[in-house]
Amino acid sequence: MINLNLKNISKVYNKVTNQKAVDNVSFEANKGQFIVLLGPSGCGKSSLLRMIAGLEDISSGELYFDDKLMNNISPDKRNIGMVFQNYALYPHLSVYDNIAFPLKIVKISKSEIKKRVIEIADSIGLIDLLERKPKELSGGQRQRVALARALIRKPDVFLFDEPLSNLDAKLRVQMRTEIINIHKSAGTTSIYVTHDQTEAMTMGDILVILNKGRIQQIDTPHNVYKCPINIFVAGFIGSPQMNFFNGYFVQQDNLYFLVKDSDLMIRIIGNIEDTLFNKEIILGIRPEHLNFEILNSNNGFRITNIEFMGYEQILHFSSSHCICTARTEVNHSYHIGSIVQLSVESNLMHKFGLDEQRII
Ligand code: ADP
Ligand code: MG
Image (cartoon, rainbow, N blue to C red; front, side, top):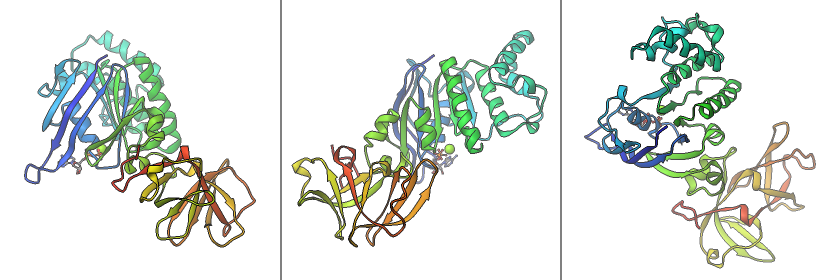
């Protein structure tokens, strides 16, 4: 097991435009940790992973495995196991030979190879498929072969680049658990890239959230959900997405948040700091934290759609000035067209400045 340390790493593909695909990224993966790099398509995740693997030059910055500077070490000397979205299996080789491939090129005895292939194939549910070719396997089985092939070298670092994106939803959930179980038993320091926030939240010890090549936040899934550092992270983590309202806190018979350019008020349960009055902010409320009660008036948020999800439902509200959603238990006492008063507990709301940074 090793520590992985990235210091101020940048990637420039085009020296003319000098645009940074990865911009000054620093983070550490401690021995045995499972780090998830999360961000939208094009934010630089694969570039970063490929630099760690040595498949791409590092434009500036330093990469360390423990105390060893790795920038100029060739990929085959980095002892990395890598799994890609498209599996990258050799189509003409059997499952056995695909898994054995990394050992064959480093010249290990045939009997030792056989022992290791069988051990891994057994642990990962491939033992009955060793004679097949990749085209005779399902998507999930192919992904398992790719995992086995990456594992067999007992790598120091495991890199995953969106390995589950090509699988259907059910298999994705199953493979998530399998990958985490493999990680727990092998204990290898791992960097896992995904654009899927559910995958990130359920798998990562630590999330490194990227946007436009830059780190936005590094923290545990719990803290990222509870205290997103800016509007980007707040909107990216959580489904349905957090609601955002521009406006002002006002004290009347109660404490309210007045939505800008409207007469819509969200009731605040609890208190706020005095310094928050009389200035425009962006209020963030997760759909699961938005409460509502039916009003006998025409002045409020109107329910425009109800999505039944089985154990819960998603309510959509809109007015001429904003739209928002709430997640609630199923209840039949309201319907499309009902007008409601929205409210939130002050300790569950998120406050952002107009610069989109969290107000602390
Ligand atoms: P992600 O994996 O998060 O989708 P990538 O690392 O693939 O993002 O890409 C980040 C940015 O770098 C994108 O704007 C992409 O177009 C650009 N990019 C990626 N690879 C290359 C390349 N080989 N040459 C030029 N630009 C590239
Ligand atoms: Mg990518």
